[in-house]
Amino acid sequence: MTYDNDQAAAEPRLVRLNKYLADNGIASRRRADQLIAGGEVMVDGHIVTELGTKVDPASQRVEWDGVILKPSGERHRYYLLNKPTGVVCTNDEKELRRRAWDLIHDDEKGRVYPVGRLDVDTSGLIILTNDGEFTHRVTHPSFGVEKTYRVSIEGFVADAALDKIRSGLHLAEGRTGGAKVLVKRRNDHGTEIVVTLTEGKNREVRRIFARFGYKVRDLHRMKIGPIGDRGIGVGQWRMLEPEEVQALLDSGSEQPQRRRIPTRGPAAGRAGERRPGSTSTRVRGRKQESGKQSGKQSSGGRRGGRR
Image 1 (tube, helix red, strand yellow):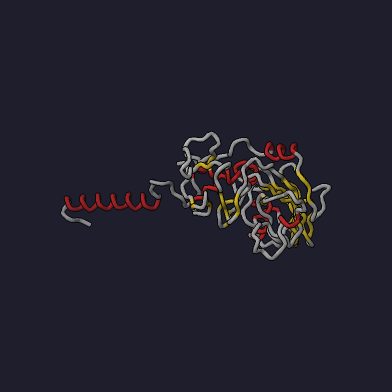
Image 2 (image 1 turned 45 degrees about the vertical axis):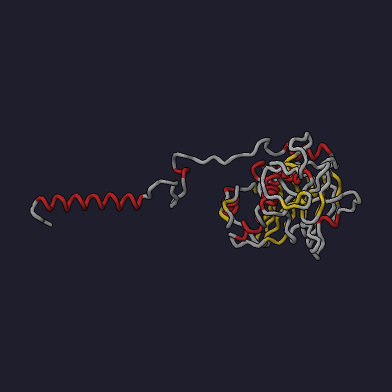
């Protein structure tokens, strides 16, 4: 459907509403669809909830969160910030704490948004941009862009815990994809580790070590893809060069990586799981036992009721 406000339905400049939101740095296209379906987007003063809606940015007014979006001819901007602790990754104007956005001292920055999140207690690299497609490519785990953290932990972290972290473990929202773990220093007083992830579950690094009873003392994101924090102090920022933006995109997969679901062998299901439509071993066993008993009873009846 095209939301045309009584204009001709087929105009050459029509674009999908979710793409227009993404081009303005609001969200990825998938997240933009959720915003549209949730009634959070207005076109020419009317709430639009139908997915697939198209608009003409040159003649129609698109609003989200009370902000009128600009045509996508606006230049994309990419800022690299070395976030200090105590700073939050949100653009909420009601937020009283310092925001990452507040640290970008560029009068032309416009509405740029954090690419992913770093929690308030974590320092390190965060990108802010108005390019929604770039945000999707860098943050979605299916593209596999790596994020590398320097982790300081209280006490001596055992090899068994590190091996499980490398192979992946279960958190409340699902199994982690595993991590690259490099031990830099380890003794009874503390452990220094470099951890690399390709996903971004909420407070994931802290939570995976907490699963084994370890407390993270300090957490710093030192790299996003091939871009490191060398030469940029905590609290400082700089513009990403065009070749750096491309290098970030190239560091991930060109196509989203789909999880392969095994159909045979032990990997087809974990212990205690059943595939849809299958019958558990316990149920099959009860059916077989029931059949045997029924057969015995029938046989016994033919023999005159012997038990």
